[in-house]
Length: 515
Image 1 (cartoon, helix red, strand yellow):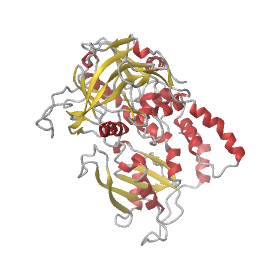
Image 2 (cartoon, helix red, strand yellow):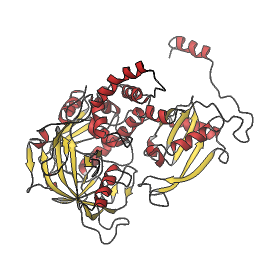
Image 3 (cartoon, one colour):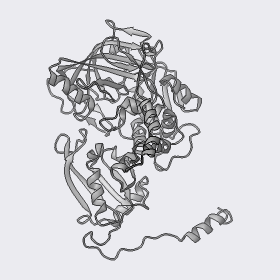
Image 4 (tube, helix red, strand yellow):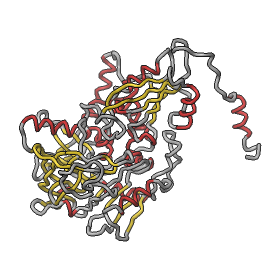
């Protein structure tokens, strides 16, 4: 069942034993995030079903969602770790399994080559329904029950500081000419922008560092659509770019904002697809943008294309502090919110954190899309230790020599997979969601000179090991069984496995044995 807003989702979490309310006073500086960090490492909450096959090793973590009802110096409660488990992600997306959504995606992307006219006509209702998932403009929304313009202040919001050195002047490699900011960051809000030429909307989830009541810095990487829109405004000579920072709304929105969608697919359309109904948008009060009507809080403002600030450092999802750098200045023009808003936040750091579950859901839902691009792929996994950009495990049904090399090359250029530092290819009997199974076959099947390839290419901007900013080396490892045509190979032994007959006998007699 789809939830209409953050508040109804939190109520559902409470009803299902997935929420802990904290009534004692807590500090938004470090204390909230430290509690959430510790909670994210605890066993999963409530009567959740066993961990799904997508992650049998770590699927049982995540603890509870948290609602801090008494935040020091603020009258707005803070919700955190709301999406921090498989069960809560299923609830947020209104499904009993992620495979349901994967199948819906598969139906959309499966090519018909070439379908007869009748089949084309059968497809029309499905395409028409997809069009109905687009956003809908309305005149009023809950997000504007209270409006602050001249008196708007970022410091009135319970914006958290996650890690001790966040925003610390002089920490790490911060330049001497830094602009003094706070360590408080917006961490879990959708950043809404529009292309200056086409008018296409984009929703990204970018961190925003607070500097003063009406001043902040927006951190977007060069490959992000928000940064592309920013460059468009700058190239046109526009001094200001409208930006809205949106907290809450339909629970599908934070997830859609994190998805690596194809360039021509709108996050709002995808959110409507997940929600089974278009997202309602309301015009902003002070800028020419529209935002979700059911949001909790909206910060309206302008990014100045001729002004930047030294933003950072920031404790990132890599488990390390990302270095400070210059990013565009954001000037607040208004803050609107519901009458009694809830402030959503998240902490990133060494996984598992809340973003780990957002990413693993993307892994599952986007498998059909990846298979459309690379049909060889049977399944894949982004293991926890890789923090999503360091490692990919992929299984194939091997049919010809050097097929694994082909897959390595194809993955290296497939959307955000291009940032992967290590791609390990295994045979179809290997469980890519079991790290030990993959590592066992990598240890057994690989000759490092014959079965590896190292190439240079794009790396994640946050990869501090890369010798250059955003570029470095990545390795492909062919851990499949070798066949003629793949270099010099000896007789390949058969792997150990019990016969089906004996396994079935054990299944029948297991309790008879007294176990």
